[in-house]
Image 1 (cartoon, one colour):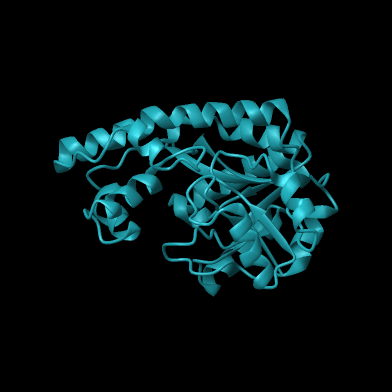
Image 2: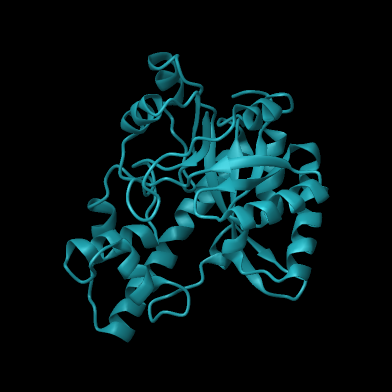
Length: 284
């Protein structure tokens, strides 16, 4: 069984990489792809040597921006799986996205104060309180709101303050690199690009078809889509399978596990999903 989308303390998960790997092994997984937000695990080869009983492909969840056929700019999340983490373009995109988080986070903190009367902390204080993370974002702000007793839990912080159309929401799409750059970098570095949680972008049918057509044209045979996703219903999975088949995209499988929030366990998805990817990518 496999899970190709999970998070650690390198970004906004609550388990350290060693802890998450042990959890995966205990759950019977044979493949775990740790896809932290805009961050790479530089100790991955050491972890592979330490845990030979589980396959640990290179992973990252890249943020990027994309303009729909109707002119809306949306933020997309792209899972990179099995790419060369030392590739120059990969490293450039990671640096750009990480440096772009400071103005974004500072704007969210400013809106919390301006619109809600909440002086939470500064960006530097948020970094200091999350020393294990290579990058901070809304999730870290939500955790800090819980720590200070402002919100009951992370979901409450998003539902009341940080989510879309809430008083401290800030669109961070313009801060990240274009979709085309992520696809080009990951595929050139021998990996698979996987379009994450499609329904989260609130695209209509025309926008969805245009995105998938564009995604396929750039990714060629190295493109995938999260057909199996822990938060989606069987009906939604059926729609995703039809779309993936229509555009000849590989299936991907994701729990999007962070250790807190709504997803309580790592996923347990069919081995053949990763086996099909292995035939195409240069395993990293």
